[in-house]
Amino acid sequence: MNIREWFSSQKPCKRYVDNETLFRGLQQLEDAAIVCIQVKCLPAVRQIARGYGLLNEAAEDILNKSTVILLRKIEEGAYQFQGHATSTYLIEIAKRTALMATRSKSRETESLDDHHHLHDESWEAEKKQQEAAELIRQLLGQLGEPCNEVVRFHHIDGFSDEEVVAQKMTRYTTTNSLKMKRSDCMKVLIQMAQQWKTSINI
Amino acid sequence: MEDFDQYLNTSSNPEERDAARQLREGLSLLRLEEKVKKAAAQRVILQRRQRWRWLLSAAVLVILAGTAYFFLRGSANNIPARDSSKETQSPGAPQNRPNDTPRNPPVQPQETPQPVTPVKTPDNPETRPNRPMAQLLPSERLAAPRYAAPHALVRGENSDPSEIQTLLNKIWYTDYPLRALRVNKAYITADSLLKKRDFVNAFIQLHRFDTEHPNNDTIRYLKGYCLMELGQGEEAIPYFKSVQGRLPVWEAQLEWYEGLSWLQAGNTQKAKPIFQKIARTKQHSYRVPSQKALKLMK
Image 1 (tube, rainbow over the protein chains, first blue to last red):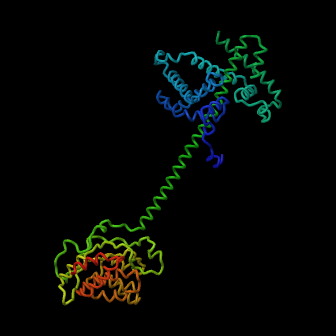
Image 2 (image 1 turned 135 degrees about the vertical axis):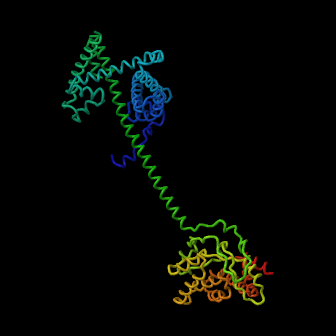
Image 3 (image 1 turned 30 degrees about the vertical axis):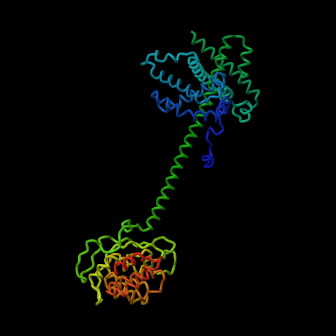
């Protein structure tokens, strides 16, 4: 980056003039929209974290986790735009996430009755999904190369097959061969997940 | 997600379908996590950049403020500090002046003289070449005097020396350095002595210059001023007369000093017309003290 670029970097929320534009940006998973909402909410999240006796680093973590929850809710259609600021909703999520973080920190010393409101279905589902994501991360690691990167490029990083082939990101030179390989890898991954599930049930 | 869809459509095993669904959800969450991680990294860079921008702006502001401060302070140093007491101090002799004989030495001033620094005015000699080093424009405000009248060597036969001295104490109005005085290097010693009110040595110094540079108006003017401050008005008059009409900017002060010198010499008859002339001139710098002198001389 040169000095000119350094000085000319725009404000993150410049593109998002109102709540709806920002919501649409988040719906499209635009990086700038995510940066914008995070910049808007960070001071409040820091304050929340301080309120729970957490460090600034924890505030960053809470913000990121809360943003993931928000994006998923938007993606699933659980949160729809009704004219309100999405940042307010994100702060509400962050409050609960911070509370969860506090709970996990002091699980051994505090009574669960103090946090009875956390035991609602949505938060249990959140927790399960986070655990599932962690499991898949582990399974992908076990899958090895090239399956790991073939699956990752498509399902996690969001590259199109054309991009992967054009930029020679894998050894596959055509989109068809790439798709075939990914299909095989997915089968293996599903089998691994199934095996893991069976082992847990046992 | 075509891989999952394909798998879910082709596979009939419910356990496999369930596993595939879970996998799809997990991958979707991972994708969002990666997206947020990437955005968070961008945000951190952005915030760091903004912080640096603030710091740089603050540094630039501090530098600008510092430069402005030093510039303004430098300008302020070039303007002579005005003594506020000057504005209120009335001209004339000090209150506790001993009533001694005319031969006694003059009372030493209590105040320290101000440094000689020319005023940055449009009429400043520094901005106008070939102007004399000592001058006072008629339009310039008269500085309040800081020193009492010297004990005049009154020689007039028809005048009462103590009366004259009392009058001089009331109207004495001189000041050095002159407000528009420019001091050349050659005159630094004389100027320094004049500031210390060491008129005897200043006169000696000026006399030495006078022999080296005869007919120098400024030297003659200052010599006259020295003699007047030494109470030797009669000796001062020829010097003042010799430079009269040479430079219009000197005229007002020369007239006033000549009037004072005539009084010192005990010649009120010669002093009075001069004060009357000054009092009639509306723009004259010494109009008010001249009016006062005339009032007291009645």
